[in-house]
Image (tube, rainbow over the protein chains, first blue to last red):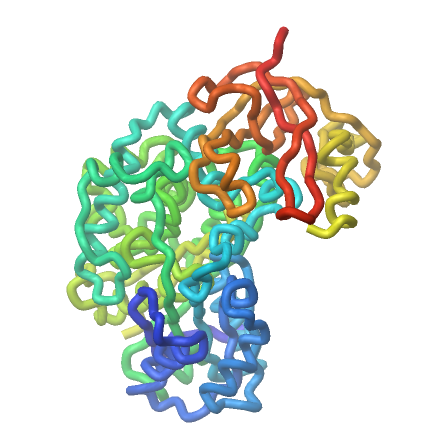
Length: 385
Length: 131
């Protein structure tokens, strides 16, 4: 297996991009990734997306985008793992390059949730769960996570305020991110008083609905300097799964897919959680962020709130968590989110993160979940300057 | 929902039919190809108990569109007497009276309907147990 580098990237602001189509929006990210790079040919395009067939009446995203980017006849296809689609696509692209089958591959994600106006976006997102044994009973992505949050609060006696405080930190971080969908600060009271969605989850526990596209270009590490003088290595990555049905799991306080994927990725990168300087974690809801912090090894079980209050998840603490603002503030363009996270970690390591820059970040991690913990992809990057 | 798609899940959703591993005794629900605990391949037919306790719940206020007229309703995970867990709705009780740990029993109920001319879907919900 060859070692693999990320040599360039492109992002769009997460927003409701009413004037942009699927192809137009991804085109913006792809163009940004190709600008300032010496890449002249793409061998393949591997793209993450979840909802285009429900909300934009479009399948065959690979050909659609290859056509728009004028890179036909390059190999191109879509990867779907619900909200984990973006990092799943990067994993597929990594294996394509590492195996030696392809040299220069564009990967990333695209999502156009705003095309779902007048349709059932809640149902489309809910399809990450078990259609026959969860959705059938009227559950949704939010209510399944609400079951986990209620259980967590009951077992660990965690105060409701602690979850609100996590959202407050995310918005504080995201207020400095030019790509964030909700770049403003909030207060604990705003979270607690926001509309109830599925108790105990209120509106400000939830990531917003938005559109976004992120693109990355991968090549063999040993050829990276041919294309760019600032690149990062993908030093570890793994995907893992758990039961699709939340109630089939013996422990509802942990995502086993995250525990296993993180363990494999740490081993591959030959690091421990303590070595991670910056992490972009998957906080679809505040409870998802809390469980993820614990499963990634950044906090003991049931103790995230104590560390949060101590500032452990801010620069200078144990690990700088979600300097982008995370899904909560940067936004959650579902099938693109994992690609955003990996791009954002790469920007931190390349020193390109502007006002959200964590000083001297050398090792970064991105954790991208599909469903309510049924799939997780963990990607670890290392600075190569 | 197509009629065959609804009909083929009647054993699992309405009759609470599951599988039991002949090797380790673990109950598998919903059905799988092998035992999800020990990997055993010899699985026997098994019917879930109809009583249990509420493990966790949520009062759903913003559901998918075909459940909007039922909101707010309670979604829960019920831990049955044999330890098996099942996700379903909690019914026959005001939403604010639901509490973790309460004793529940299965009851046959309408789940949803596909508009004015589609099929009406039924399955088991759980309600407070009388004894």
